[in-house]
Amino acid sequence: MYEYMPNGTLDDHLHKLGSHLSWLQRLNICIGASRGLHYLHTGTGIESGVIHRDVKCSNILLHENWAAKIADFGLSKIGPINQPSTYVNTHVKGTFGYLDPNYYATGKLTRKSDVYAFGVVLLEVLCRKRSTDRSLDEGLVTWVQDSIKEGNLKHIIDSDIRNEISPKCLKEFVRIAERCLHNSPKRPTMAEVLFGLEYVVALQVKFNNSLQFAGRTIFDRMVNLFSFSSNREREKAAILAQRDSKLLSTRKDHNMFPVMKEVPAYFQSPSPSLKIFKFVDLEKATRKFSPDLLLGEGGFGQVFLGWVEQNTLAPSKKGVGIAVAVKRLNQEGLQGHGEWLTEVTFLGHIAHPNIIRLLGYCKDEPEHLLVYEYMPNKSYDYLLFTDTIEPLSWGARLLIMIGVARGLTCLHSAKLMYRGLKSGDILLDEDFNAKLGDFGLVKYGPKTGETHVSTRVMGTYGYAAPEYLSTGHLTTKSDIYSLGVVLMESITGRKAIARNMPKGQQSLVEWTTRNKSNPRKLDKIMDPRLEHNYPIQGAIECFALALRCVSNDPKFRPSSEEVLQSLERIYALHQ
Image (cartoon, rainbow, N blue to C red; front, side):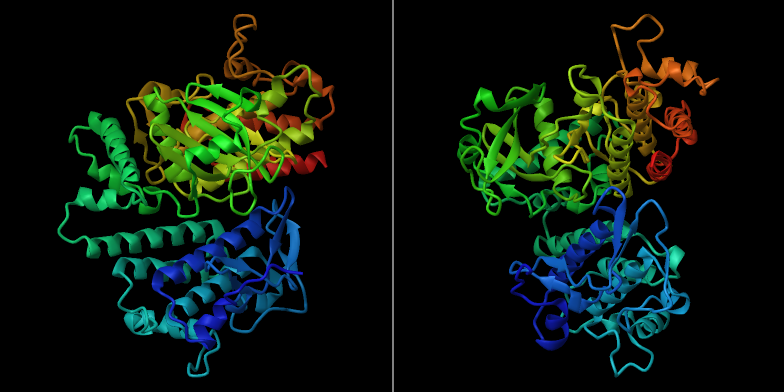
């Protein structure tokens, strides 16, 4: 029994029904399909991923709101995601026209085989021709590649959408498709494809807005990206402009626009998938913000437990529907309003199993609220440092850190810097899967090797990278330093800063780095509550990895992908 998809398949609308699909509709369908494949490849479980092996337009189903879903898993293969996942089979299976040439020639199946097939789907969406169109002597892929070489790119576009596509958007879309069709090692991951397509949508939206609002100032058009249903919602755009101009006022040119342009348009406005809640509904969901339902509080405000209906997210009675966490901001805190806006604009566009899901938001003046999925097992620091509960096993700690590394890798691939990672920001669902929470300090980052400079250092002492504290220079390697501190907490069972410890042991990084000369003396380092229930070699490698992460020189720190691969290898030693 399957969920009914009233709009049929992408193949139906492209090749059978002759439906008019706008360019933006097609892009959003591609984004939905790529998001599904990305989840299959990386997010179905701690140890297993799925290779679909039959990606094609007829296996992309469309919901009544045109949301795309991947279907037909009859040929799928399941395997460990911490390995290249190459399967050798003498019986090659799939659909002609979508088959990866490397898979067809060698029988070796990898996730990049799905990426190739998705590249073919992208061409079908652009050209509205079947992968095996009989009017094309050499097939769709070769025809498109030859047309590009001959400079006939515009002539391959479906005539229905030829006048809708901006030149930059077309160039970027074709570039993504070409990369998908490269030889296997050079193909992108589905995460890279997903973020590339999000960028394409941003280019198209910007192009559409420039046509629609020709004659307005650059600032007017930029602010219009932050469009809302009511007059009051327009204030969010003003908050964005005010906040960024304040942060950038330390620059010599005192100009907000150059840096604003660096942030893709899809990160400048809330995702349309977010629900806009009314304050009265959140009052009902939390029993008028009952103190009995208070989950936590801080400088930003308070977080309450609430209940909403699963499908509509309408308020429901206690214990009915699904549980949610409702963050209600302190009305007097200016910083909280900026962080609220950051979460709304960034988090709604990110879908990953190891990143907390933002369901929606509320801005009924003077109230600002955020609604998240509820994490019943609290935060990682609670489980690590609470003496009255059973300590986490070595394997459980590794799995949590693997989840954190996956979430961070997702952010870094989108040029996002978490800026402030700590064990208290790692939330755990009912199955103890780790999810990054609290995105109020996230920054969109420059290209690799460059830095973002801020005169206002944000984060938590004990976790912040030394170069960030001393210069304000922020890169993805700043996040790696914080990740290394959390990894050290996992190994030692000690907090990043422990005021109750003897002098010389209060800073976890300083204390552990003094022991790096002889990492084999594990008894001095390892959490005594583990009671030696860990593989010695795995513990040594984990400690060495943590030390690399907290290197004073950012150049010597690994990337988040390298950390992830190392942790998965260390976890394999535990098995």
